[in-house]
Image (cartoon, rainbow over all chains, first blue to last red; front, side):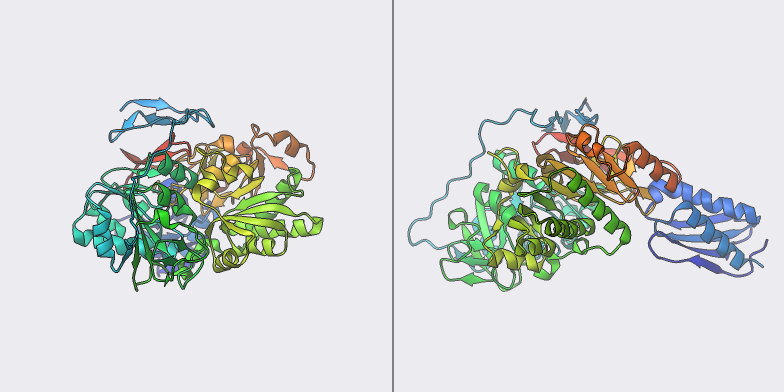
Amino acid sequence: MKIVRTAQAGTLESQDVLITVQKGKPNTGLVIELDSPSAVQYGSKIQSEIETIVMEFKIEDVHIKAIDKGALGFTIKARTEVALKRACE
Amino acid sequence: MEYVENIIGRKIPKEVNGRKLRPFRGIGMEPIPDRKTATKIRRRLPGEKKLLKSIEEAIIKSGLKDGMTISFHHHFRGGDKLMNMIFKQIAEMGIKNLTLAPSSIHPVHAPLVKYIEEGIITNIQCGVTGPVGDAISRGKLKGLLIVRSHGGRARAVEDGDCRIDVCFIGAPTADEFGNLNGVEGKQACGPLGYMVPDAQYADMVIAVTNNLVPFPCSNISINQNHVDYVVHIKNPIGDPAGIVSGTTRITRDPIRIKIARNCVKVIEASGLLKKGFSFQSGAGGISLAVTQFLGERMREKEIQGSFGMGGSTSALVQLLEEGLFKRILDVQAFDREAIRSLKDNSSHIEIGASQYANIHSSGAAVNVLDTVVLGATEVDIDFNVNVVTESDGRILHGIGGHQDTSEGAKLSIIAIPLLRGRNPVIVDRVTTVTTPGMNINVIVTDYGIALNPKSPYYRRLKRKKTIQYKTIKELRDIAYKLVGGPPDPIPFKDRIVAIIEHRDGTVLDVVRQAKDK
């Protein structure tokens, strides 16, 4: 799929995450910018959850900004999926 | 570095920065020192005066020099202005290399970070919250942070482990001869309990007040025979509105209310909730709800308790005024209602830090407690509790009375949600042990209640069919399943920045410098 617009999903409420999806610069692949209170202990898990969803969409260059407020894995995945769907054709 | 393992399995260096450490050996296992320390003898002849007009004059008269130890109280909590004010003056006077040993440091003391960086403050002995803790975690303090409980601090001051050269007491009301109280005047903050050991054991005691009253003042909580000078200034020493902090409001969160209700169920099941019952809880949201729900049950069952212990809150004051408790013993006020009650109600009794919680005394009030309900940042499967370090390894909280009350009370309950954001609260091994698991009886979470099998109340509580229990490992597994597995280890540097003392002066754990993100 192809990203045609910048799109968001989620909120900044406690235990939620705000995902912003943008078209990445050519040949930069997947870039994740993560801001999370759990970054030290769960940062790598959050990154891989976002990656899993991006892989399903088969998108090449994408910039994802995740402002996390302590969301659990299923929330991270669901918000990423919706943001990507909104961003793609 | 040479290490010794303490009784709870933590490796304690034999020495840090020339300071010899004694590993924690268990409750009552460490031999006690022979005598308490003695304060310097001072003399005031008839006709000599104590009243001064400026902070500068007071610091000069105090004889404060490089390398000394100074102390303050935290009864104004987030509204304290005195510590920043004094340090501004100390910095101007060029005094350096001080050990700061107040009863607590709060986010309002963020300006101290600058003085730490400049080497004006080089050691701290205190519980710290906010930016000062963050700065220490990042290695900015040249020396060490020693974290003690409130009772541990009183013990250290009286035993001489923490010799105070100059103590500055923010006094809401004072007379010109140094009788002080905390309940009168615009700056009323409630008890001055944490400064009682300092007043008695510091070599020099300076009271700073905005409200000078004719001699003798009433409601005396610190006596003139301990106070060397009284400074009368206009700039406010504190803002009582800052006493109520974010954590001291009652919760509306249904999850936390459920936890609070379950705490009350456990207290009832323990058989302790009967005539003469005594209780302490903190000022956190869950604790306040427990106090309220406990009041409901005491009303229904027509039980009158002997005393509630403070940190006092309006929730506790209400129970006193209804006659559900006969007395409040109070070392610190958490809101205005509590201050008013201490002033007006003779059944609301002020106590000093040693009377409250000093293990090296002829018996502290915590020893008479039936139940205490406490919080935690982390609890591990050995029931060890961490209240000091955050999930990123930084020092962000003090111990307060956690160690003292959990050790003294018959039944200590930790009331916590299973998750905080994505971080599991129940883990394999806490980052830092600040209260040993042997003092914890019950863990109440939103996903279930776990009993410490080593608790003397284990069998009695287990028999009750009104409560479903889980093991602590089951709770940990639920938490790990929800968050997607155990947490990644927190990366630390090698340097030790803080020592966590048990209330008897031995060492429970050490904290290392945090790695920057």
